[in-house]
Image (tube, rainbow over all chains, first blue to last red; front, side):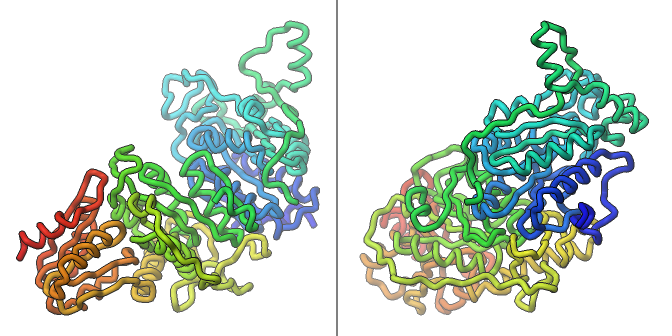
Length: 262
Length: 327
């Protein structure tokens, strides 16, 4: 078996744009799943609406491609009705943090045994490049033509505060680290949240001086700050620039969970 | 249900809002579970988008709406039937659903069972459109030892998951059985794969989803006909049934007929033709005449709407004065 066996071959090619980071995250996820030994027939992928949410359609398992923002609520129904199933949610920043924000925090609070992978491209890629709740300050989008002036969500801090058992953040540059994080997430009992920052050349990159995909991936790399290093810097009273993304394992704990296989 | 379901091997979960409730019962249904949620007015409005998803993905599930006065927050704990058109047309796009209306506590029980069976048979969301009058009523009921139980048509491995048989219903490819089914709210082909830009495929899919219900309307029709030869005929569903019964009991007039509806959608219009001598239909509803309009388009004689807003049931006098006004 290879992770490629998890692909629904007759659905390819996918709809992701050239240079999109979503395929990288999908590959990392399937590679991680392959290592867990899970079977296809006991695994369900659930998603909402947006580019990231098309991912389950390319995977050869049962999958539920639902309404905008509601993937986690649908997944909760699947998992509660049949805890024997492994339930993985693909979502995006617009899907999960805006319209679906309420379901996200409540799933974290319940600590329901799901793994949620958020492909955060910091914009609504599919619907015309509107600003999302994670669009960084100053960035251009079709609804922030003079630069975003709202403060973005830190999704990992949100998940931690709301009660998730496992929280991790990486970028599309960090494929090995991301694959490991997804595997830990899949194997963690309770709510696991993995945020993957991804480049979106079509909607984000071309508006924000990342005309080359590699430039954007390099930006994500150079603006990543390992949590351990961040913690050391904090201890030493060093200044942490606002435009850095804290990456690594943010939270790992063992709070009581719901929907766990008996 | 929170108290009773866990003792019987069921699962109860209180979701964060009605959008999530509707979503989670759909998710649960795909694992093979029979699933339901219950709400009133505003919560029902919140469910609309995911109701459309259930229709599009042919997900069997049951929603109970104990109707209150609207619009908006309106009259919590007061009675109304203002959502009869919302249940039929509230979600976007063309579609058909099944709606049942109980008039007694016994019917709350029986029609809930029936709702699950219809949902499983036709793979469609089924609505129990109660009203506050029935919802808060206390009556003696008889619970039988067993109830009829209709199973979903099984999926045949190797066939296409969304290819329907002659009855327009595809077999149900339950999650967790290795069927590898992709379920999407997008317009999809018989494999279940998105095909949203194919005009003829979209038209055929929506037509099938509608015909699946509309063609079967007399399989699921449920109504009583009383005094079939009468010239003046009441039509009622839900709470107002009780007032009509009282009026008929008081008047003891065989020239007054009664069509008592339990299945309201799809509307069983042939039932109207059973009243061959009808000169007028009288339709008491706790709304401004939502079903009266539906009845009007099926008959040539006058349809007299007897609306009642405010949260209270029609009094017998409300109905007798309507009879007197239209002798």
